[in-house]
Image (tube, rainbow, N blue to C red; front, side, top):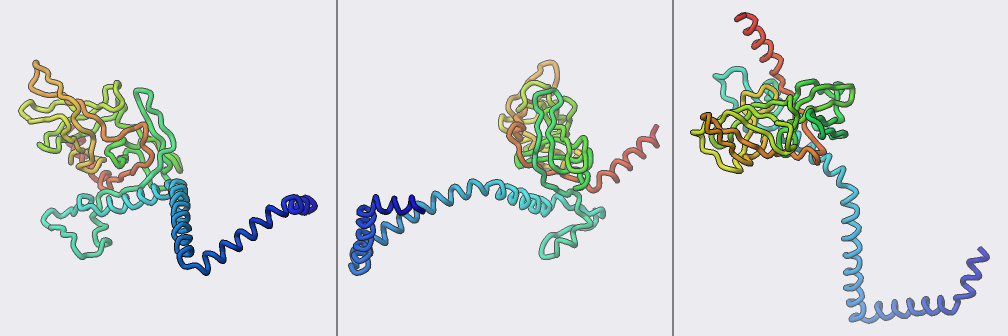
Amino acid sequence: MRNIFLFIRRYFNFLSFLALQALALSFLFRYNKFHEAAFAGVANEITGRVNEQYNTVDYYFKLKKANENLVKENVALREMLRSNYQSPDTTQKLIVDSIRLDSLKPFQRYVYREAKVVGSFITTQTNFITIHRGSDQGVRPDMAVIGSNGVVGRVVNTSANYSTVMTMISRQFKVDGKLKNSGERGSIGWDGLNPRIVQMRNIPKSVKIQKGDSVLTSELSSIFPPNILIGTVDSIMNDPSTNFYNLRLKTGTNFSTVQFVYVVQNTQLEEQQKLENATRNTNE
């Protein structure tokens, strides 16, 4: 308290000048219309600039929450896609118009769950990411994992709250893909070299292919929904000794920057696998 009185005593004249100056300016701006309008304009300009900078900083710190909300919204939108619903009775035609969404639930084939990437190991021949969703949240091995830019990989192990995902850039990973333009199918895998390039093999030379053509997941993939981007044609390898092309694809997903993914559950996968296994056993 003593220091405050000493400060006021030392700068009394200067503080008195500032107080009288503020009082004089308030009289000037209050009783003079021109100066009042000019002051209001300057004050609004300064306030606007301060608020703009504040909003920029505030928006930056809220980006995490905004990203999480966008991911949840994308999950809801993906689950509303017509391709996610399939009736077991092929004689019936499903028309999505004004009927309630709940009435489609018995026919929903793919269920999406959002997940955050919390670990990444992409420097080996078998590359993994870790996601913060596990068995307690309904994640099981062999579920598909996709991102906003396409295929990511498949779940291989789970704990209560975490799962490890083998990415597409692993030597053991294979997925059935198709050319978007022609529908021609081929097997896609990684050769262990470039982490942004995978190979698509056995495409007939009669198929017209151009650099930049999109390659999507096919309907024959048991875990991935159809028409999910795998990558785009980067180069076409012509082997004169065969009648097939080998394509080099640039992956849609950048595995070094992926932060959020979607775990996709094929609700009819178990039924399909049981039937296929029973058929194999019958024919053996």
